Amino acid sequence: MKILSEDDRETLLANIERLASYTKAHSDLRGAHHFLYDLRHPAQGAPEYVIMGVNPGETEHDWTISPTTTEETSRYDFHKEVGPGRSAIRWTSSARFFLDDADYVLTELFFWSSRDSLAFRERYGKLALSPHLALCTELNRALIEIYQPRAVVLPGLGNHELCRSLYELQHNETVVHEGTRIVEHYTDGRRPWIFTKHWTASFGFSKSQRQAVLSYIRRTAT
Image 1 (cartoon, rainbow, N blue to C red):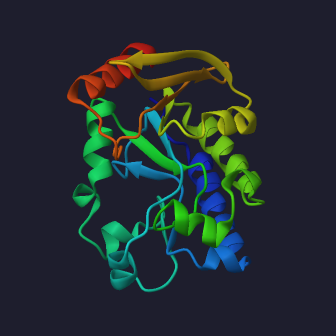
Image 2: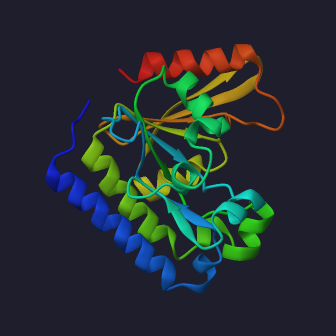
């Protein structure tokens, strides 16, 4: 695992500030409750994994506890500062399970929040056509270069083709378990990118499937 240098920390803080300024400059992004980038767990950890979601969720409670556009970053995490903390979020327990309690850093394919996929399209349009993806890709590449993770883990299988194009990935294999596709494995030439069945899948994620994903990540991210 890599310990961040002072230069690394300054670069990440500069990226967060750039992201905050970019958000203020675009009316559609100002409608988001928050953006998420470089959110480390634990806060002072040395992440072994990058977890890249699609985009952050957004709830009415978020607006209640923090009524203006805010952030989930290493600089400021509204869940920790004005909310009940990271342990109250279901995502945290899933990350602990699938990554064997390893340190990780959270980022997103698209940094800004929405309530659901319908709200996303109403606010931002179609993900693959978003003009904001270029900045997201640039800042994510910088984050991955700084942390040098064992693997990038991406919950959700719907965007693996888009990510292949954005991040110049090569496909390794598709994993099927119990008749269900649970993993798409890519590489950037230096590390695996492991797309998994979504951790909060609405159509069910059996105990056996979850264990198979855990075992695959454990075996592949060496």
